Amino acid sequence: LALEVGHLTVHPEGRPCHCGSRGCLDVETDPLAFLTEAGREPGPEVSLLQQSIDLVRHHYDEPGVRTATEALIDRLGLGLAGLVNILNPDRIILGGLHRTLLDADPDRLRAVVADRSLWGQSGGVPILPCTLDHNSLVGAAELAWQPVLDDPLGALA
Image (tube, rainbow, N blue to C red; front, side, top):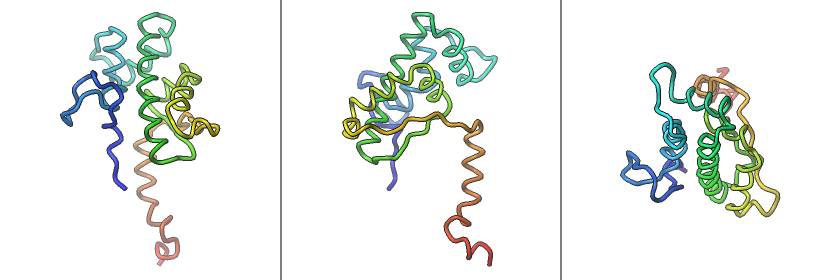
């Protein structure tokens, strides 16, 4: 099963995506989308991700930041609900900006997913924050260990 989940449409009139469509999950819930929605000009001093996380954490009470946060949570929730309907996962783990959005308003994100997914009526899917910070390093470590997990005896031979 190969999926391009970042290209689920979550905002039909949204930003153009490099795939040729508009309003894809990738471009509607990324740091640039958040900064733009919040009316902030991205700065060169730190990454867009860090700017977005800092904005949510330190300025959430500002109306523009709160509105942008809610908009991205709603779009993220639509995308996650689609994935829940297709894959029926036992849990969803969010990292990066998505983790920060979950932390900002967990009830809103969980409600959007529950309202828009078939599994919402049956108690829903747990949506949890990633507890590891360097996701790409963890992923690389998992790839290195995958042969051992797939065939423990063969890996020892």
